[in-house]
Amino acid sequence: MTATRAQPDRRIPLWIVLLASFAGVLAAHAPLLHLPYYWDEAGYYIPAAYDFFRTGTLIPFSTLSNAHPPLPSVYLAIWWKLLHFAPVVTRTAMCFIAAVALAAVWRIAVAATGKASVAAATVLLTGLYPVFFAQSSLAQADLFAAAGTLWGLAFLLDDRIPPACLCFILAALSKETAVVTPVALAVWESWRLRSRPHRIRTVAALLLPVIPLAAWYAWHWSRTGYVFGNPRFLRYNAISTLTPKRILLAFSYRMMHIAVHMNLFVPVALMFGCMLLPPVSDQEPARQPSASPPCPRRAISPTHQAIFYVTIAVNIVLFSILGGAILTRYLLPLYPLVLLLAVNTFRRRFRQWTALVALSAAAFVAGLFINPPYRFAPEDNLEYVATIRLQQAAIQQIVAHFPHATVLTAWPATDELRKPELGYLAHPMPVIDIDNFSAPQILRAAQLPPVWNVALVFSTKYDPATLPFRLGRTGRALNTRYFDFHRDLSPAVIARLLGGSVVWQQSRKGEWAALLVFDRAPASRVPAVGWLNRRYIPAHVLSAEPTRPRKSLRWPADSLSRSLTAVTDR
Image (cartoon, rainbow, N blue to C red; front, side, top):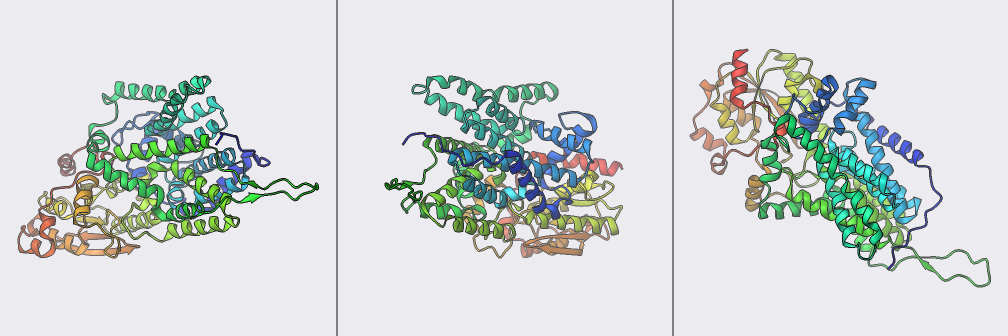
C-alpha cells in the first residue's frame, strides 16, 4: 500500500463549515446556556478565569493553583470583557470552541478521505456523541485542548507544519497533557527519518510545544514555589497513580471509553462488521465504447491511519497512567478519529452506508437522554443537567427558608454556597465541608462541634440501586482503593445519625438531594457507634477507612479545622 493523497471533492469554504457548526451547536444547547457552573468548571476553571478577569493574574488565588496553563482563562475573560460575566456568555463562548473543533474534524476528514459526504457524516456524529455534546458548553480545558489538537492534526495531514506547530502549542497552553500528541508524533516521525531524511524539520517543529509549556511551568514555579501545582493535586493525579494494578485497571476503563461508552459500540461494531465485506467498486457510466474497469473505493492512506493510531494509542496510555479520576473528557480529541475511521469504513464497504450513519446518530441521541446500565460521570451526557437543577433547587430552598444558616455539605455544593459568581445564590453562606456522605464521613461529622444547623446532602456519584451492571466485591474494593468509590447514605439514615429531620427532598434520574434541619445542637443527639449504626450501616462500611479526596481542586484552601475556626470566629 502506498501513501497516496486522497483527491478531495469540490471544496466547501471552511468559514461556512465553521458558521454552520456554531449555529448547530448553539441551537442544540440553547436550553442549557443559562445553567450555573458545575463540577470542575465551578471548582477550578471559572474561579481561575474570574481571578484573571478581575485582577489580571494568571495564577488563581480564589482556588488552589493546579498549574494548568492559562489560555482558557484568558479566552473566557476576553468574552466577559466584551459582553458580560454571566453563564450564558461563558457557554456561548464554549459553543464557539466546539464549533472550531468540529471545523477541524471536517478538515481532517476531507484531507484523509477526499469526500465531503464522509466529512459531513463525521462532523454530525462527533457533534451528537454524548461526551462531546455535553462538553460543548462546559467551561473546562479539555475542549480547548481538543480543538487545538484536532487542528494540529488537520494541518499535519496537509503537510503544513508551521500552522500545525502553532495549533499544538495552543493545545498545550490550554491543557498540559495535550503536549503528548505532538511529542508522540515527533517520535514516530524520527523513527521514519531513514526513509525520509527531509522530515527532520517536521520532528523539530513537533517538539516545539514543549518549550512554551516549560516556560509556563518555570514562571509558575517562580511565583508559587511549585512546578506542577499544589502537592495534593500532584500526589492525587500523578504520584498515587503509578502502581501497576491501578494502571491496568485504568487501561481497561480507557479501552471501554474509546470503543463502548455512551453507545459508541454501535458505530464501532458496525465498522468491524463492514470489514467482513469486500470493498464497494465505483464505475462511471461508460461514454466510450471501452468502459473503464471498476475501481474499489479508497481506504484512508496508511500514513494518515498511522497518525490517527499513534494519537489514539499515546493518549490512552497516558491517561491510564496519569489522572486520579478516570474522566472520559480527557479523551475528547480521540472520538472524532474513531468516528472518522468508522464512517469511511461504512462508505468503503457498504453501499447504503448512510443508513449506518443514521443508526449511529440515533444511538448517540438516545445516549444523551438514556443513562447507561453502569456507573458513569454525569458530565458524560445530559445527566449533568439533572444534577445542576437538583443543586439549584436545594440551594433555593436554603436561601428562601434558612438564609442565615451554616450549612454542612460536600463538594461541589461547598463552592456553590461560598461563591456567588457561580450562579446559585446572591450572597455567600458559611459552610462546613466533608468529603462525601458515606458512613465514615457522616460519623466523622457527628463528632465535630455543632456549629451548623442545616445540612445539604446529595448523591455525590451516579450509583442508583437499579443498575444492572454493578461492581462485585473485588471490583468494589479496587475502585474504592484507586478511584474513590463509596456509597452515600440515604437522607433518612443521615438524619437519624446526625439527629436532624428531612424537610425537603427531591430526586431526578437516579440522583437525589435533600435538606436536613437540626432543632438543637447535633452533637448532643448523635448516637454512638452501637446498635443504631449496626442497624442502619453494614459492618464492612463502618470499618472502611476514610476515602481519599477526589481531586485537590475540589478541596478548599484551608483544612476542615481552619474552616470551623473561621465560622466560630464569625
